[in-house]
Amino acid sequence: MKKTLALLLALTMVFALAACGGQSAPAATQTPAEEAANQPAEEAAPAEETAPAEEIELIVFAAASMTETLTEIKGLYEAANPGVKITYNFDSSGTLKTQIQEGAECDLFISAGQKQMNQLDSTASAEVNTEGLDFVLQGSRINLLENKVVLVVPEGNPKGIESFDQLAELLKNGDVLMAMGNSDVPVGQYTQKILAYYELSEEDLAAAGAITYGTNVKEVTTQVSEASVDCGVVYCTDAFSAGLTVVEGATAEMCGQVIYPAAVLNVSTHPEAAQSFLDYLTTDEAMAVFEAVGFSPAA
Image (cartoon, rainbow, N blue to C red; front, side, top):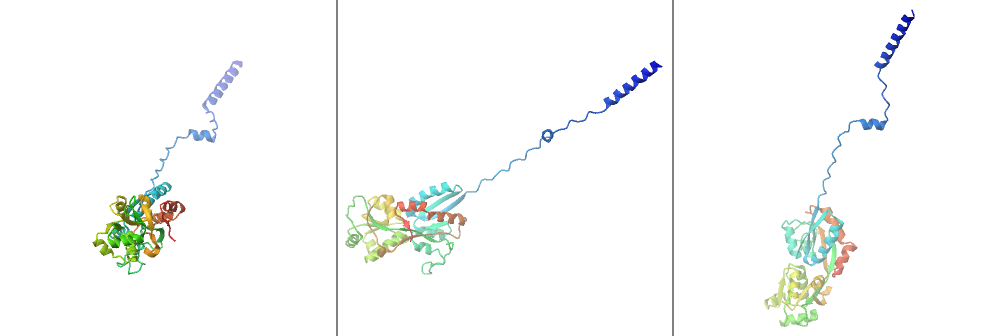
């Protein structure tokens, strides 16, 4: 009997142990951070590529007398506006007007005279805008600068010319050779007014060999600098840039005011950027560059 009870007890213990061994141990509880760490890593999304901003090229047609000042201003403006590149075309205002009329790409036009701007402005008098051209973006046109017309002489002033009055007498007597701009160049048109003021015939003077011409004001200053003429009529800004001796300035009675108008063109591909640059040209920073060579803000 005792052996039978011992055997039954032993069998009970064996079955109990077998039952315990067949059960799985409960899984250990994980923290959210551990669960996240054990998740398979997702493939990172590729970073979006940012396309570089497109550079804007502004094409500015400007009177040759602005070459030095606008070149300096270009550096200032581009440094503050890295997305803008300024490309200049410097020449006589008459030549620039013709190029615009013939379809040359241009965003902003700065003329050395009102006539050339008026010839492109549909709101100008039909007596000036004889072809009915329409290139000026209305509302953008301003009078930007004023210049002065001056009489200059080569180094040493060989002819001893001291005034416009004296020059008029020398021209009448055929004792001097003067350089001036062509009739389609604003500085040439101002010189024509001075000759008319002194009742001198340009045609007669040219026929007598007393006048030579330049296709723009820079060509006139070059003739004087090289002493190939006895004197010349240019702007005070060009006289300053070329280091020429100024003997006298022309009065408004002689040739009127020398105003430089500027306007965005309605054919511009970047009218807002062109307007922004034109606005900058009226700031104190830009005006300081203009005034350093003799320009002044237009009244």
